[in-house]
Length: 368
Image 1 (cartoon, rainbow, N blue to C red):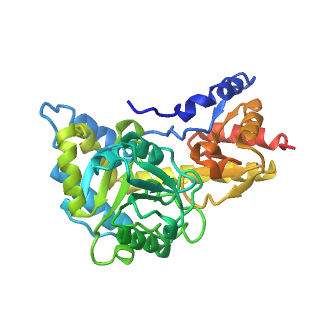
Image 2 (cartoon, rainbow, N blue to C red; image 1 turned 90 degrees about the vertical axis):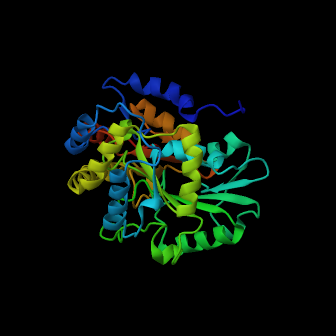
Image 3 (cartoon, helix red, strand yellow; image 1 turned 90 degrees about the horizontal axis):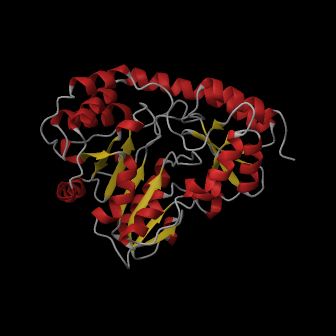
């Protein structure tokens, strides 16, 4: 076992305990786990496929692969074939295991955003590769073998333009590195132009050109379809890379259960459920955002995704303590890298009632 740091969310416990002592109870805006109902279409498909005696195929059923291809064309404007897609057991599994699946190790570098989901770094740590937080493609080291980009980003909601994605792909190809774009929040754009235009995918022909060589995109239904408990996700892109990943995943026994595959097919086709969920999050955002601003918080980026990235201009732990006294639990920015040390992440994944209560508490008094 490699020596890994303490799981970051475990360090939040004293503040969680303090928030729980609030007379009106704690409001958890930290982890971002969905609270709304799973669509009936997915639940029905899961039940119908529950008699799953045989082992599922690692590559996924033909029906699932066709559904992923159709979804990419309809929702992301990307043309794929069945050989370009592969289901995964949630997206975090893929993020953490991809350096291993690609055969990376000591002497290799894994690049990821300077403010980022911690699992990119942990994936590098698990194989002994160098973890390099760097946003500027010109500064990516020569030994880079894997590059992660994240758009819309967790935690701060920034969206990368077509030009920025092209620049990243071009540099990764110069280095001979695989580039993977984590796009799990792509259905949730709030501010112009993303309130009316589709958020770009790295697999868009305007980014990769005529070939997807060396490029993959990761996607999950956890947020858009409230399937976090199902672990329903997939990776798409370069057919040769997909084929290589498939072989290793077969040997490792990484198979998405057949009932989950069936539920994923149904969820991918249910655009109405996704639209309804987006509307729920938009309503909550329109309550929480002005409450934070009226309380003296500055919002950074947050034009898309499921979080508000906010700062009081002080160390994030001071902000977390301030919030805990008001019974609010949020995500310390330092969890996402040193560059986030003065920010706090607020998740929109709480009920309308909880969001309204949090807004009231935030308006009740400024930090200073």
